[in-house]
Amino acid sequence: MQHPAVPELAHTTTQPIHWVATATAISGVIALSSVLQPGSATAAQPRAETKAAPVGIAPPDPARADFPLDCGSTRLLVRKKATGDLDGDGRPETVALVRCDTSMGTPPDAVYVLTQAATDPKPRVVATLVDPKDRLTVTDFAVHDAAVSATLLGYSSPDVPSCCPDTKTRAKWQWKGGAFIRSTPTGAQNA
Image (cartoon, rainbow, N blue to C red; front, side, top):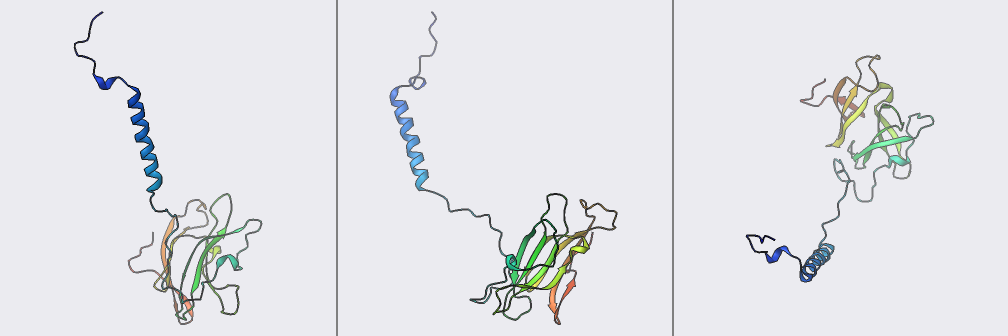
């Protein structure tokens, strides 16, 4: 038998004390990690609001509204909502981005403005900003500074398949003279 040129190192062989020390260290790490926890995470999107609603006045709830959208046997889906005082009356309005919830294809979007009387708990649609008959998909939807903004994806002709919109337009709506007026934001370009 040939002996190694280097003597056996003490740390290369395990002893019961090594296992006890390792188990103690791991137990300490586990105990410490159960005490020191990070803050809870949330997946909520930041609310896009123009200004806070006055105390005691809740914005209209889209779940309680009757939208003028016929979805047949599928349900109506509120994809996004944003609130703010759009007309300057001190009461918040809700802008709702809705579509029919289908399992296939990309159904067109609709954007409705909801208001609610102080004495009536049911919200009502007061304006249609995007009509589903226009076959548009709405992205970058927000309410900011008493205006509604969005990017509208559409089609250059009826021959373009619904899967593949080929036009892109930025739009902005503001309450002026008793109606929502649509404009193209400064610096926006159409595709």
